[in-house]
Image (cartoon, rainbow, N blue to C red; front, side):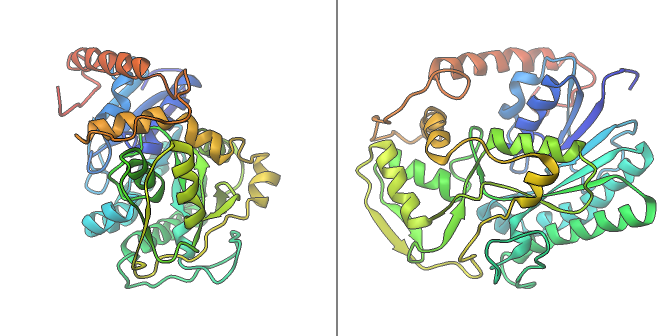
Length: 365
């Protein structure tokens, strides 16, 4: 890696959040190596980057790979199934990536003398007894429940990060990420926001687990990325909450989605899954003070700005949307369906070029 540009490795870079970070770091002048086994990530999330000389895609599993090179300046670990449907489908892979994968990346960071950031989660707080949750709270987690494969994977990753920081002086950063949404989410991943929007756009009943009184915050992806970047460049080695402290009940959110999309969907209620958190709200005092960061996008504007993407995703799943009446169809990068189609055509062109680039390992070329 002879380039004078910062060398940044992003594990899980073809996922929802990872792909947006690939965009951001390339825009900021880095050379980005994106590593993803495509278990839950999607190559089309980075299609538009495959022909960029500052981008290298490597189809690899960090849980079994130690040969990802060295010479990196920054490493970000976003490799992990992140939705209940995914981590319950892949429980052992989820545990592996937070333990074996995390240790492999830490070894690369140590050999490279790189700064490494772990994408942790609000799930380390479990079903919290403290509200809102700040970073000093140790959590209330069932270590053997169905959600434990994700919760404990992330908690272990934090523990080994802290150990490498203490033992070797490695520069480590830990972001505890709360619910985030935006373009490139999979509508079939089971998370509440894409599920509600898919159901609303199709005029299907919106399914609420429990009585709808449980709360969640929702952070727009652009705000989340800005918080991650600021944390990476900061001097803070202890965990920092990154999320939107604006809390809403699931029932209220379902009604909000119906109104925003102009849907005729009714609301149905299903049993609450085991260990599902009743409340969730980040205390972001630390992020405000240390990083000078707080979210800039309110939920209504953020969801409205991504409606065209979600509408396109419904069609992608092979579902004929009944509801074609979203209230807002914004133009620009987040909307404009013709622009989306142009980017996909450009992505196919980049894939053809990528097959000739020795630095790119693309299973579809």
